[in-house]
Image (cartoon, rainbow, N blue to C red; front, side, top):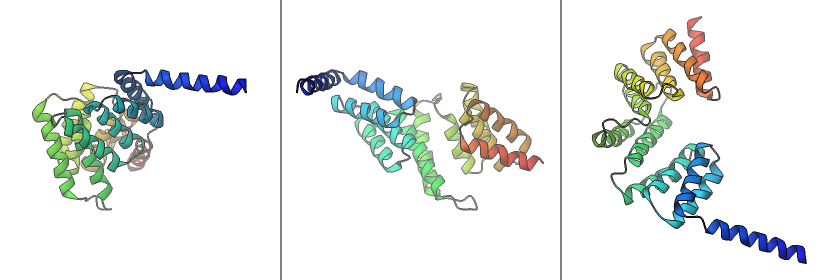
Length: 221
């Protein structure tokens, strides 16, 4: 009986301690967990932050968890829209809506590499909002490169992706995008292989990078 009372008191103390955390602490914890790819724990912390205060940032972070962690585009879009409802000019949410539109487009691609064109137009509309607001917006420049790639403007795609590398030369995704531009667009398999190698050296757990590296080595044989 005494043990049950002690356990109950400890649980109550833990709940009280959790309730004592403020918005900023919950948000920071959620963001740290999201970066560590601990999706369930991140979601829990961010929901706690949202209960304390509904802000564009916490809704954007929840969208990121659903998009990156659960691949749930509908839920992610809902949270990005909540962020924009609070602040229509919130640049991070605008950018993420562009990324989300590109992902939607990728799901519609057929075996000939053609997809639902209006989704590309939607992505461009969001990206235009971002760069009209801040021409030097540097987060995820490689996503804009993907837009040009899908438009078959390979030179512009390459130039944009190379800007991403100039901003962060340890951006594995940017090197992978450059590799794909060389591989599928420009048919320069030597350059493609070199960039996929760089991407793998920075992230050897990405299945797409490993696949493209193998596919490019086959082309070079």
